[in-house]
Every structure is written in structure tokens, then in C-alpha cells.
Amino acid sequence: MKTEAVMFDQYGGPEVLTRTDVELPAPGPGEVMLRVLAVAVNHLDADLRGGVSRMPLRLPHVLGREVVGVVEQVGPGVVDRRPGDRVLALPNTPCGTCDRCLSGLANLCARADMPGVTRWGGYARHAVVSAHGLLEIGDLDPVVAAATPISFGTAWRTLYSIGRLAPGDWVLAPGAAGGLGHAVVQLAKLGGARVVGLVGDPAKADFVSSLGADAVLSTREHDWPATAREITGGAGFDVIVEHIGGEVFEAALGTLAPTGRLIVGGGHAGEHPRLDLIQTFRNEYELRGSRSQRPDEIARVLDLVATGRLAPRVDVVLPLADAARAHQAMADRRVLGKQVITP
Ligand SMILES: [Zn+2]
Image (cartoon, rainbow, N blue to C red; front, side, top):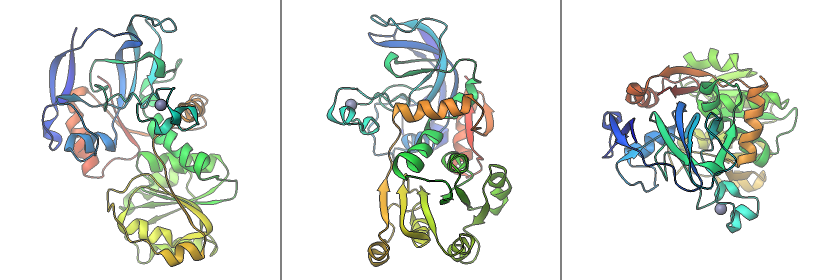
């Protein structure tokens, strides 16, 4: 079947994204074809497009990790889905049978089915996805549903599954105006924590305050770590969700309370920061990584969004033809919350 997609056949800047007609195969066993209603834009999309993601792709490729759509066709053997179902495709559908999947680490499954990475994604009018990784969205706005799984699922994983966040804890949220950061602020407040948002551009502070942050600091302020520590009454932070890297990582580490948890989920600003070992062991800091999300973590945040307790903020909704514009906005750090494409 012919459909319209944005694809790229060489790595490069946003300009390599090209709108074109592509041939989409019919859904195979265990697959469904969706008519795409909305697809969210992610930093990983830009890394994949630029060829710096350390994930192998077969070109040409269609991006799009957070896909929401209506089932149009079901493949052989699919009995629990039917045309007309409104669903969110999981960004990572675990295989369900490997050692990691069977030991509660489905987010680390090496055989995960990943729309926009291991198969063509949702920057298209139609997408074929695994029938095993679909969550019903009911009457939830598809744009809001698409803006949920990666940001809020990751925020849940870092704050609660890994960070053991408790009411009254102090949380530092670097990159607080971005997709992940804006989810961290909201989810931490929902859990009764106190949150300091950290932004680069001070013009983003009002946005972060509107999410419920108790205070917002800019990395351009002189000695922001000292101010941050003061705000916590000198105690320091219990949990830091760090995904900036470089100098922000180095400075943030020193703002942890003894036994505090710094959880890393990215590092564009410097993937090899200096780590102060003495500070780390004398304070019994915990450093952990966090990778993607388990299906149950995404189901949980989707439910919180559907019941109005979390509100993904969508900066812009764009047509398929403007995918490159969305990527440029990310490169320019102009995005507040999420960008969503409605093909
Ligand atoms: Zn697996």
C-alpha cells in the first residue's frame, strides 16, 4: 500500500528529512497497520537522523517513536485487536521471553521492537507496528497521548522505580523546560516532593514555574549550585534526574544530599564529565543510569494523564511536511515541553 511519509536516505541535518510516497507492506503475523493520528518528536529522532545515536539503522528510514493511531488492518493471528481501535504503540515492545524480560527488566530487552528505530515509525500517514505493544487510549486526545510515553514513562522510572522518591524529598530537574524535564517536575510534585527546576535560558523559567516547580534556576546564574543548596535549606537534593551531561552533571553532583541519587538518562552537553570520586564515596552518593521504560510504567503515566493528574504540554502541533522544522526547533533549544506531528 502506498502512503505518505517523511524519510531520510542519508545521515545529516534536518534538511535530509524528505516528504515522499512510500510502499508499506501489509501487516505480517502479530502486526497491525495504524492510520497515524499523532506522533511525538524526540531528541533520539535527531540523533538517529544525524547518525550519532550508536544505534544501527537500515536506510532509508522513517522516524517516529511515540505513535498513536487507529487500527486499520490486522495481520494473521492477531485476535485481540480490531479495526477502529484507538491505540498508543509502545516505544519499546519487549520480546517477553529473554532473561531480562523474565526478570523484570523488560526496559533492557535487547530484542525490543522499537517503532522509529528497529522498524519504520510514525512520521507517516500509516505505520505497521507490533500488535503485542499497544495500549488503548479511549477518548484521550491523540496529541496528548503521543506526548506521554517517553517523557512521563522515563520520569516515572527515574523518580520512583529507581529514585525511590518519597514525599518531602528534594528533586533537582535539569533541562526542566524540555520533554523529560517538564515531566519530572510534574511527577515529582504529584508525589509530594519539592522541586527545583534548572534551565539554560532564563526566559523558560515562567514555563517551569507554571508546571508547579517550587523554584527555578538558570545555569547562567553565578554559582547556581550554591543557590540550589540554599533553597533546600543546606540539605541538598535527594534525587537528581540528570540528562544534560558535561558541566551540568559535574555541578549537579555536588548538590546531592548524603546518600542522594543521581540518575543519568542522557548527556548531550558532554558524555565524559569529570566525576569527583572522593565526594562520591564520602557522601555515599548513588549514581545510576536509566534506560527507556517498562510497559507497566507507561501504562501508569498514561492513566494519570487520562484522569487529568498529569498534563503533557505540547508546544506545537505540526503537519507532516514540517518535520524538519520540528527538528530545527530542537537543535535551537526552542521547545517547551513536546512537539507533536499530526500526519
Ligand atoms: Zn526480551
